[in-house]
Image (tube, rainbow, N blue to C red):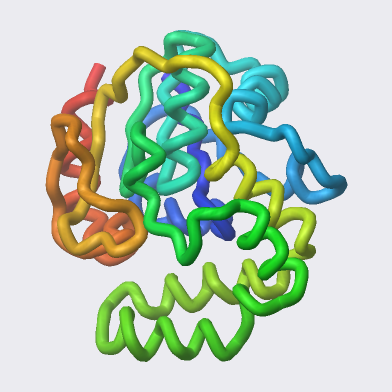
Amino acid sequence: MRLIFIPGFGETQRIFSQIAPQLPGEHVFVENSDLLGSQPMPSLTAIGYARMLVDKHHITSADWVIGHSMGGWIAYAIKHLTGCSIIQIASWTDPAKVVLPVKNSAIIHWLVRKGWYLNQFNKRLLLGLVYRNKPSAQIFGEVFQNLIDSPPTYVINQLRIILNPLGEQIDVQPEVIIHSKKDTIIRYPDNRVSTVSGDHFNLITHPDEVITAIRPFLTP
């Protein structure tokens, strides 16, 4: 059994560091910067990126794909293309569940290019207002800093995966959806959900609960 891990917006494989060692099988960790960091991709969608990952990692229906946040959205598109099994953690199948500072993608892209969205002031503001005294504060700060330090092209390509319409209908459903009711980044799903403690970063702060929700599906 092969497990393919896809991190979310601004994340690296570190987001899976608390759960991956406890899961069976061969592990493949996607680094989104490998394919998204070099040039602008204005028409990029989650399905388009999913096709790139399917080709690169030879993903088939025999694989399990585990995605966090944006990574779960990409996993959803990969299941659509290959019929593989997927586990979404703090993710979505309905784009309306994504909480955005503004709804216009062109404005968000402009704010990123100008440095008015991802900057130290906003990082401190969110850490103080949303993540003060929360166990997830450190990982949120790390992810936000990754976005600050990343080239705008890479950040915007990720935003395109999140914001650009898919261009085709997806009718599949994830095998497992894991979510926390206190997630302030992705609203609670309407699907059948395994609810765990914590917030958007539950797989870091409450890994045992996340593992408990996943393990029964991966037992041979």
